Structures are given as structure tokens and as C-alpha cells.
Length: 405
Image (cartoon, rainbow, N blue to C red; front, side, top):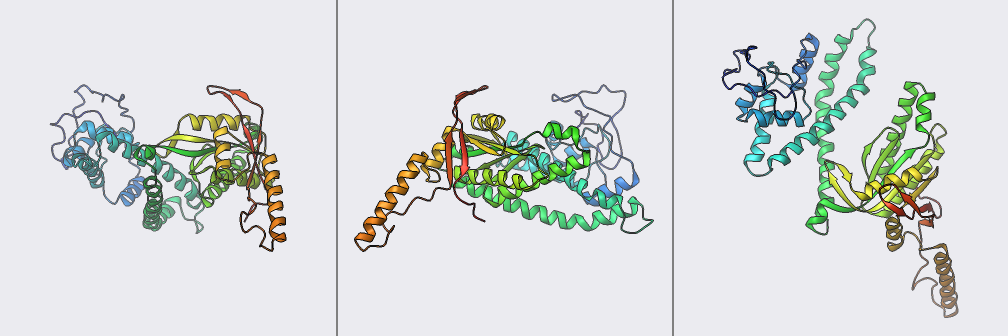
């Protein structure tokens, strides 16, 4: 919805319908050339739906909206671009809601609560997230629009009442989920050891990748492929959330997840492999994980740790989990895995000896130091060069015992 810089004499009255003269030269904003072909639709149903969803009718050109909000045209353009809105030239397509949104963002900057770059980031992160959400919801509801509940009804007759019924419920649900997620994210941040760790945090990061997905794309019909990807993403999202991790993003045949500790990430990775192995319709899965400092931005994660996890995924065997040395040392440190199988055997032998002595002395076996309960096992693999990261020593992560329900 961004536009070129307008002449301040154009559109002085929001209701007068004035447009910039076509004789004037068009000056693009410093960011990119303006696409004036992105004109708002004039389809009657689309306009009715837009008015229903936005809660207001079209009233302002972009310049008029910016001026009414008390925001410079340059800043308004940058906000709109960040939110992902199309350039519309000086068409009258904006509403009171657009004016209010500009006022709020600009007000946060003026009050010193957000810097201007931070306000742009807020606009961009919100725009990108909600754009994907809106596309997904429309795709999900499309079947209901194509197949009317009553014979003879047109899509036009179905769409408007369906949106009218869903809109308030979806809005309330969106706000509820957002508040829940915001509370969880805030809780994680305030527990950080220091201010620096709030931004650059030590996390376990993992990629889970479907093996042979490219071949599948050539063999499966589009609908079958879509169902497979949806099942994979759904299963992954559910398992990651249920066991205390966070799904960072999905990439069709791959998911990226993170957890605050290596033990949680290890449990998630093995659960994912086990779940895919039990589903005969799914390809094999491979997982790569690393532990270390991670930079978080706009809900995504970056840095060497993330790159290493991605590289480990590419060399992981089918139905297996590879981790880096830092990850292996972390699960050893926390007692989730023994340093070696020899160490585990020594622990068992020592525990047996303690039990024998306790029985001999009439004490309860194990009351001084019980046998360690290792959840995972680690097997060192051959060192190998990893593109861009030098030589690494992967460790094969496996489960010890039966997974709990």
C-alpha cells in the first residue's frame, strides 16, 4: 500500500476525491520504484468483504491518510512497506483503521518507547506473520467456499455470511494465542542470566529433514504432496510444542526448532524420528542439532550454531540424529547421557557394589547414591570437514531405554 511522495497540495480534503495531476512527474521513494499497477480492486463482492473485515469504508488516499495521522509521507510509506502492503499510487483505498495504525506506531516513536527502526521491525514482523496466517486460513476455508452448504448457492452467497460469522471469533482467538505466546516469550527472556544473553542466547537448535523429498515431488500428485507436507508439519509442530520446544519455521520438507536446553531438544529429535518411522506413508527423517550461542531476530534464529545444525542434518543417516560436540558435552554435563558406554558400565558396577555393601550392612540399597538414569546414549562418529565450518566431530544420539508416554 506504499506510494510515491505526494505533493502536499494534493488531496487537501479527505472527502474531495482529488488526485495528483498526471502531468506531474512521479518521484519514487528512496526504497524502490513504485508499482502503480497494484490498483485496489473494484469487484463489488471484494469491496463488501473488505469493508466487513476492516470495519470501515474506503475514504483516504495514502497521502491523505498520512497527513490525517500526522505522519510524514516518507515514514508512512516505510511503515506500509514493512507491513507488506502493495503500492497503490494515490488511489482512495484507505480507511480510518489505516490512519489509527499510523498514529499508534508514530506515537510509540514520539513517546520514546520505540526507536524508528524498531517500529519498522514491529511492523515488518507483524506483517510477515499475519500475512502467512491469513493465506493459510483462506486456503483452509477455500473448500467451504467452493462447496456451498445448500445446492444452488453461489460462492458470492456463501462467502460474505461465512466471513461475517468467523471474523469476530478468529479475531478473539488470535489475540488470545498472541497473548499466551507473548507471555511465554517474555518469561524466557527475563530468566536470562544477563542483558547480553537476552539477545544472544545459548540454545539447542535442530533441523529435521525428510529424506528423498525431491524424488517424492516427481512421483506424487500435487494434492498428495500437499497432504504429506501438512502431515509432517502438523506432527512436528505438535511434538515440538508438547515437549517444551519452539517451532521456529517450516520449510516444506524441513522444520527448524529450538529449545532452551539440550535434553529437551534431544527428546524432541528422537520423538520426531520415532513418529515418522511409525507412519508408513512418511519418508525417513534425519535430524541435525547443535548447542551454542544463537542470535534471535523477528522470531528467527541465526549464527554459527544454526549453520552447524543445518550441515549436520545434511550428513545425518536416515532415521538418525547427529549432534555436535558442544551438544554432546551439554547432555553429559546435565546427566542425560553418559560420557561413554564404558562410563555407563562403571556406573552400573559401582551401583551394584554399593547395593551389596548396603545389604551386608543392613541398609536400604541405593539410598546414598542411586544408579544414574541416563535417557540418551552418544556414539562418536568420524571427524569430517563441514563446508564453511572446518572439521567437526559429529556424535550419533540415540535413546537408552523406552520413551515415556
